[in-house]
Image (tube, rainbow, N blue to C red; front, side):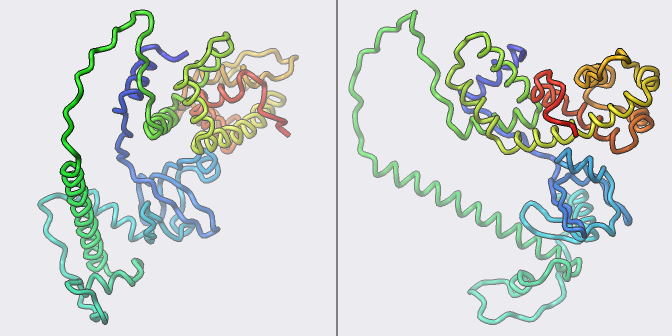
Length: 355
C-alpha cells in the first residue's frame, strides 16, 4: 500500500496543477545498428573502438548489453531527427561538456558558393550548409551550422512570446468593463464539503508519466486494486488515474519487457533447479524442497530480499556462474523491475506457458 504522506503529496500536486516533469539531464538518442535494429539509449561514454550506453528498454538491454563495438553502429540519431556518425557524436558530446559562456565564437567556416535567389537578409553560408549532410561538413562548418540553428530557434521563441503578449493586451482592451453584481455568500454546510476541482487531463497525463518513470505505478495500482476488492468505491480521479496508467504506451512497453524477462528467467532457474540445486542453496542461499515442483515466484522473492532492486557486480558474477550470461542478465533485469513484475503476476507462477 502507498505511504499515505507520499499519496497525499501526489494528489495535492495533481489537484493544484503544480506538477511538472523533472528536467532530464541525460540526452536520449537512437543508436542505429548496421543490422537495421535501433536502440533508444543514454550514451555514457564513447571511445575510439566502443560505445557504452544504458538502453531504455529492458529487452534491448538484455539483447545487446551495455557496450557495443563501433563497427556495429552506422549512426547516432538525436531527438531532433539529426543523424551523426559516431565520430561526430563523440565531438558533439565533448563540445557540449566543455562549452562555457566565456568560450570564444567558433572560427568562420570556409567560404561556400552563394546560393541563388536567397531571401532578403539571409546568410549565404548558413543557407548552403542547410542542404549539406552533417557527415560531409568540416568541424568548423558543423559548429557554425549549430550556432546559426540556435540563433534561429531563439529568435522564433522571442517572436512567439512577443506575439502572445500582444494578443493578451488586445484581448484585454476588447473586453467591456462590467461592474460585478453584489451577491450574498452562500451558507457553508459542514456536512457537505466542497469537492476539489477536477484536474486537467494534461496534468493527469504528466502525473501518470512521472509515476511510471519513478516506478511508483505498480504501488498505486496495487493500492487501488485492494481498495476496490474491499468493496470501496474509487473516486473519479482514482479511477481516471488507474485507466490512464493501464492505457499508457510506456506502461504497456514496460509490461512487455517484464513478460520477456519473466520467460527467460524462468527457464534459467528451472535448469539450475533440476541440475544444480546444491549451487542454488549454497551460493545463493535459496530455500526450497527438492522433491517439490519449483515455485518460481518464491525463488524470485528470496532473490529480491537478498539482492534488492540494484544488483551489485559481485552478486551478478554469481548469477553468471550459475545461469550463464544471458540467464543472469534476465534475472538481474527482472529484479530491477521487481515491483512491476510482482504486480503483473499478482503472485501467480507465470504469465503464461513458459515453453
